[in-house]
Picture 1 (cartoon, rainbow, N blue to C red):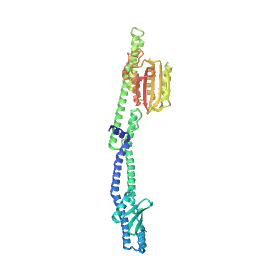
Picture 2: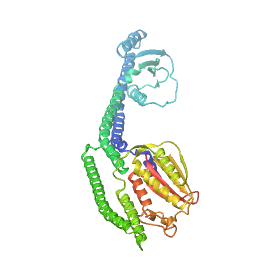
Picture 3: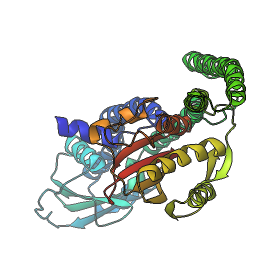
Picture 4: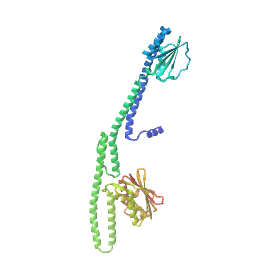
Length: 440
């Protein structure tokens, strides 16, 4: 049962348009099959039998005339009568004996002709349906010999069969075409909504989606637009609030820095300066994380050039970087935000390793960036926790060289804003591997 279910799932169409058409076409096909079966069983059989009875009746009339007028002189006008008014070609083989032939498989028309001859003609007969292309040959045993009657096939043929089939197929194709057009128009709004939702999830610009189509589709589109407005309003309010917080906190920090600068080198002043600098560094990192670079608009950018710039900057700072890209990748990006995310990952690797390898290539429907290092790595049970804000691995990382614990959190926030994600794993070099996936 499970195998049949899986097979049916693989064979059935996956798209909404395909499934909708299947729902429409399946009853239509079943209706046509039932109609054809009913027509075949009733109309075709009855018409064929009536035509065959008409031919058999004409043959019976010829036999009756031959019995009433047995003279050889009368046969000519009887045969002419059959040819002129019955479309029958009749000939008599005198003193011939009908051969005993086995029954042959017959179709609907041949079977109807056979049944009609048995009803109208009491003498033995043989029906030949294969010798002539456009004629049937009926050989009937009479006392005087064998009577051969050549019957045109057209007398046993009804064009209503083909007319019915043509009308059935023609109307089905017309209805199928009309259904396809209407269903395609109904599916278009759903596809537009799906594209808009996908672009919004990837952080790309979403063109205004107009509610159209069926009532349910309009409701879904309206709900999506309302959700997008609420999310964008929330992001805007958060950014504005953080801008105010940034201004309010920087002002007292600036005053503290000025007073410390005017205090000279008294005892404890150096420690206070260090604390103020650390507070300012943490404040900048927190604001960058909370803001998420949300003000930058996406645009087409070359990811390969972006990676080359980040790698070159890391080299200038003394890092050993090995960069390899499989090709140029142009895609919608927030270049500054993504550059910061990649730089955070590279700086994090260089802080604890000597060499960093960067690889970029297309995998299915996404661009995959691998950043490997030869450092100590991160334990498998801690790889998800390091993305939490202000989380630091003091047990495995040097706290004196560690940052504020926001680098990986900011990087993941930016990458997820592009619709992708970051995963950490073990690199072939023994260190840490950061796998960045960006949907195309």
